Image (cartoon, rainbow, N blue to C red; front, side, top):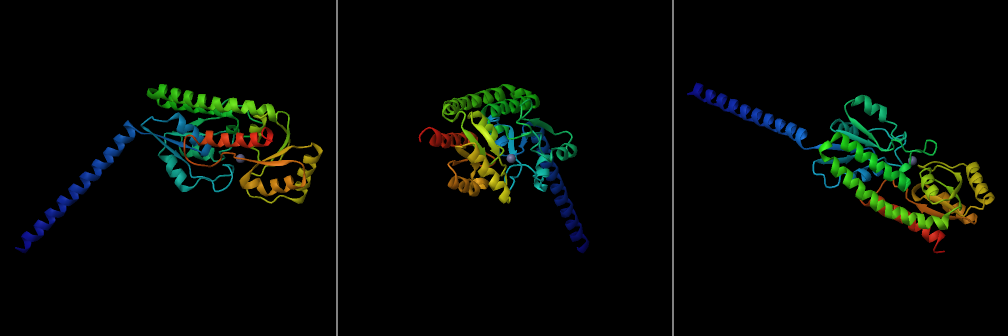
Amino acid sequence: MKKNKSLFVGMLLGAITLIAFGSTFFIFQNKQQQKEQDVLKVVTSFYPMYVATANVTDGIEHVQLENLSEPETGCLHDYQLRPEDMKLLSTADVFVINGGGIEEFLAEVASAYPDLVIVNASEGIVDHGDNPHVWMSISSYQKQVLNIAEGLAAVDKKNQDAYTANAGAYIAKLDEMKAMQEDLAMASQGQPVVLFHEALEYFAEDMGMEVVYTMDLDEERQVSAGEVAEVMGAVKKNDVSAILADETYGKELGDMVADSTDARAIYLDPMVRGEYDKDSYIAHMQANLMAIRANFVAR
Ligand SMILES: [Zn+2]
């Protein structure tokens, strides 16, 4: 009797093991198939690239879009990849980057994942020296959108038409905003300005402004008394009409300079973070243009 019972327990355990092993195998195989058949996993390096790629891949069912974890301050410069970023990239098929050197971790990614397809959105776009903030010019951002569409179509050829159509539709929407900007540029043309963020160089150029001084307040840092004196000097000497700054890092100094000179401070969004929504570039750029209108047209 005792012997029979242990035999029964043994058989039961064997059966459980078999079922468990079988179902694990089944799940594993299922995942493999899913990966091969339907999912194109696209990871973007940071916020503006996420928004651009969300538009290019809009409605294409099998694309899974994710962004690296967001830097806690400023733009992507000096960003160190976190373990969860490396984990995410290990599952990615395509990595969309802004390029221009802003992704300082790029060499590390390329050597860790030699098979990962890297799409450089700034390919062929001329920079201000080595200023990588090209998305701040609507025209350059449109070229980035095209580059992303071409890069994805090269990997996922059967959806080439969909990527091209999406890029075209988004570029047409951006064209409307560019027309608005060109109208406003008639009022801001030739205005001497000071910038408190390198990203705003592209925007100021599109507005036809004359940049007389740039101080890069990309993140929290101490501004020396000497630097403050230099800015004040540049504002007075060039009869600067406006200081263009990022509210997060430039507000303190912007308000101070505006209070003690004839220049006004205009706060703009460098679009390095925001809602993960495909229309957010347009919404933020529009807000930037409204700020210019309020200061140069409706004044
Ligand atoms: Zn930056």
